[in-house]
Amino acid sequence: MTKRGLTRLPLDQNGHSHLWEYPTVTVDFDEPEPAPLFFIRECNHCGVLPTLQITDHAVVAAEPCESPRGITTSMLLPVPSGRIVYTDDLRQFYPIDSSGFANYNTRFGQAQWVTAMEAAGCAYGWVGNTGPDLWRVGKDRYLIGIPEYDDADVLLTQGWERVAPGALGLWAYCVADADDWITRGGGPGKPDQATVVTVTPGTYRFTHHTGEAGFDEHAEGPVVYADIERIG
Image (cartoon, rainbow, N blue to C red; front, side, top):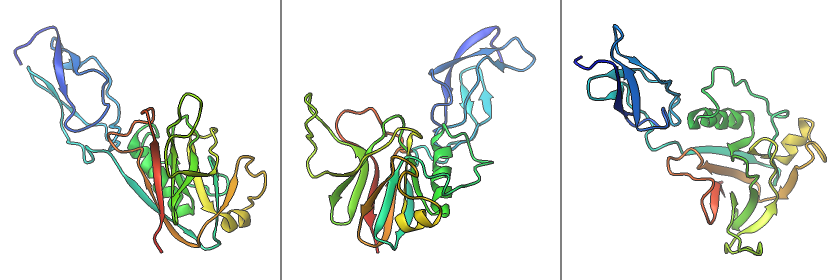
């Protein structure tokens, strides 16, 4: 190392996302070993806290990100009853053990929740502070999202039919087979904002998009958190 004192260097995140909010970082070269004067976060996409390599010219995340384009999470939900319940929070009926999961504020940590809730029998996904509704968009096809409205709150998005309102408590959606939910103690008012919707019996695939690198919950126009289709 030839540099001395405090020096600003570019940060090469090596495919990781949101390790640090600025493109450059400060390094103290007067220490016995160059010392970074910043704290990196776990990667938003893969959940890893990488080690750093410091040279005279850059600070580089040593391990490349395994998911540099983000995460598209897919889950399956059997609906033999032909009825689903839609709300924000069904965790009391579908408990999971999240110990050992990555930070929930990372897309990787949220994807772990999606997978664990699927195994428990509930489709789940993070939606931020939005409370999106459930919409029918075709035969046995639905989505969870926010359409486009004009200044008078007139719906502009074509082909979307609202079938259940969203809720804001958990910043998430939960969908389960209604009969299964009832056998676990659910029912009218449990929770208050739960809505039961009649659908074709079968297995539904949920494709959850919020983990994708380009996803923007604040984008203008329609925002789709999850696509839902009956696959069998």
